[in-house]
Image (cartoon, rainbow, N blue to C red):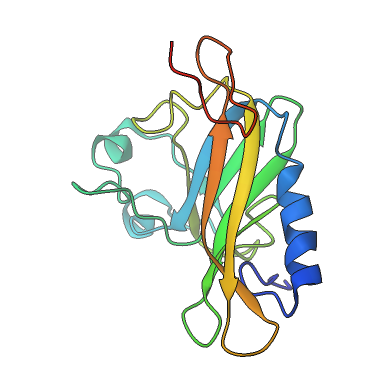
Length: 179
């Protein structure tokens, strides 16, 4: 598996290419959201099975390994699936000299995490924080690039994804218009 650079871009042109790829999410309707995590409960639920597994057990859903009081924590990636069948993955560069997050038009398994990894895949589409996103159309994606050192390199510490407001009205930049 060749893991892509998720955040760091050697030049403004490379950052622009990443932004163009992320912009392909604009106009898409989100149909599902999945977390790709380490399989912390593999010994209890996996048996001899290897590779990614979709979490379906109500016992595991009773206390998800990613849920914490302040926020959800995800080890490898967040994958957005669209009504048209496309997948977009948010992941991050490993801590080190180049870190940050990125958004790519790829599935998570095989890019953000190896196909053979013991990963737990959680469909969080109907969980708090995500259920209001499902069924909405993405109106804008902004990758907030910043300079990296003194050269031409850039990195992306955060991404903003705008979706169509419930009433359907949208600010030109994608921001919902209050009724």
